Image 1 (tube, rainbow, N blue to C red):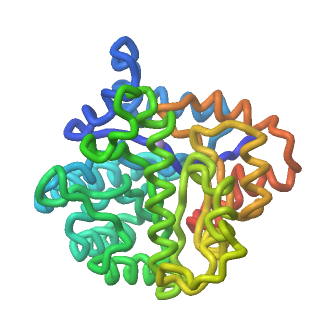
Image 2 (image 1 turned 180 degrees about the vertical axis):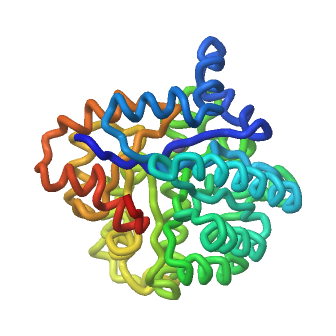
Length: 326
Ligand code: MN
């Protein structure tokens, strides 16, 4: 299929490049680092060869979220956003942008998002999971009360917020001890991000801000498979729910969330997601440069779904969600 649009497509700046170094064996780092720093050469060639019209670009992970100093985090986010705006301006027909945000300072993050959307023309925010605040061991998730005004700004700007994975900090990751292969995209990314999404749902965030749009990658980080059980475990036991949200969490999953195919190129998994949230809420993505554009495209172009759904997922859902003018 030609004209595909991808939403989880990363780049790096010099300050954040090393954050991606651990995710491939040393022999591959030269290639991965080259891919991360490139915007207009190999990346565009990959897009041309695989029927991809546009990438919405975002900074690599964990980057800004792993800088405990709010001032420093703010400075790096701003620099990355300014650099990205310059790159997009060279080829706005092929690239658009997600803002990086220093969530360590919720009010500053709201102001930076406003600047990025209103002044730089960015289409939304992509944030890499929880943020470390003041010390590496102190983490904040975005269901905390200090983010209330931030979410109000996201809702008022009417732009999607992409909740992207990161690894748990080492002291919270005992379950992976002795099994470092489980960290990163293999397992820990999905587990971490799914729990964060469930926290947002259960907090009542979407009762207070019903127009918020949250995007999850990797076909929903396992949630399409698991969300029914979250709401229905021990259904014979008549006890009040133990969280503030007013509705079953699956209701928020169906109404406030969008899922992308990034890094999860599996038709069986796509069909499960289709059955849970429908074809209007699933969007094509690759997860370049950590995954290959050709792997994503060759799978998606031939996946056993209707052509109507392929067009929505590959392109038109993104056009609508991000109000793209192509
Ligand atoms: Mn990614």
